[in-house]
Image (cartoon, rainbow over all chains, first blue to last red):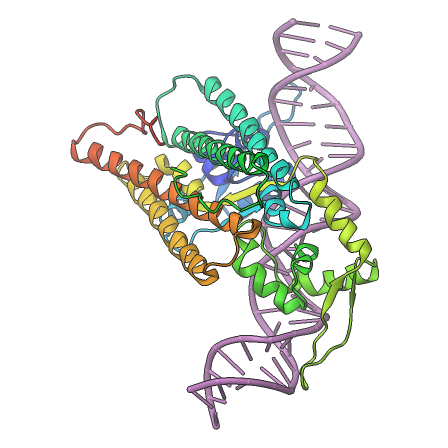
Length: 184
Length: 184
DNA sequence: GCCACCATGTAATCGGTTACATGATTAA
DNA sequence: TTAATCATGTAACCGATTACATGGTGGC
């Protein structure tokens, strides 16, 4: 992330954090506690170089990629070994264990999932508004993926919610989405 | 996860690991290095209790929830504070940075995403086959969500792949999915 | 006899977050 | 004047993985 954002024109650790928070954050977060020490390590290893360039009396250490850093970045992008993929989703975990509660309570958990995705979607759309109409590049593509992903989720959870609602109202013995197929 | 799986009937640390690997793993993983020490901690805190029950000469320490453990589990399930949600997706990160490579290379990254999701989907369908036709419960619902999620991904990445292919062949200046709207 | 599976654990290490400390600049 | 933003950093801690160590059981 650090090499990549430097490659896209970020300069300071602060800027890397700021940009990551509105872009890669959704699929790869970063905190100051990582960024600053890591920048020093990358400098030591020759992948980036820095200069002291205070703005007024305010300290500032803009970094840029070295040729070696560029190469390492491109090498990573082209490497095609199994990419890391990891999700921690507490909401989904609760749905998984929903049968440990009373029959009716699963609906609450499902409604919560729907709501949370709606909230995240609103947040993403706000980011999309902000970037406005800059030339469509790969970073924008990732944003559009995020939005499409959230839209799909809202639809899926909403439809499940409706289904459970119907079952509840018809007073029948609960069934876990046995008829779920057309989620398209 | 540990309390939950004990609640669903798992007994030993080994069994918790085995079940987690084919169920919660996708949205909440667990390793031996966590499970065994954590079981001891939970025992110390009175949330679970264990007995020594060797099977033949093979050591075995089956655990079960105490009333307190049950209560803690239900309390967690009902607590409605912001649930943790975290993704690390290296493939998507590469797509995000794709413009740092040559124009044509983004397509490779996108194709890779499509392929990886296809692979995961196949894996999930195999799990679905395995569970066969047991009564539809919440754990199965989570599996169906996973499958639907992967299917949606395959569709999305496949359609993007086709679009980029068209643009490449028509020799035009590349554009990042400017027309992407109907991902439904 | 061998392999897959059952079963329990630990040590080293890592990647990462949280909270804190510090302070200058700029726009309302 | 005050709040938001720019800017750099560290210490303590935590959650988690990896790799290792050990050994019994059951089926082919």
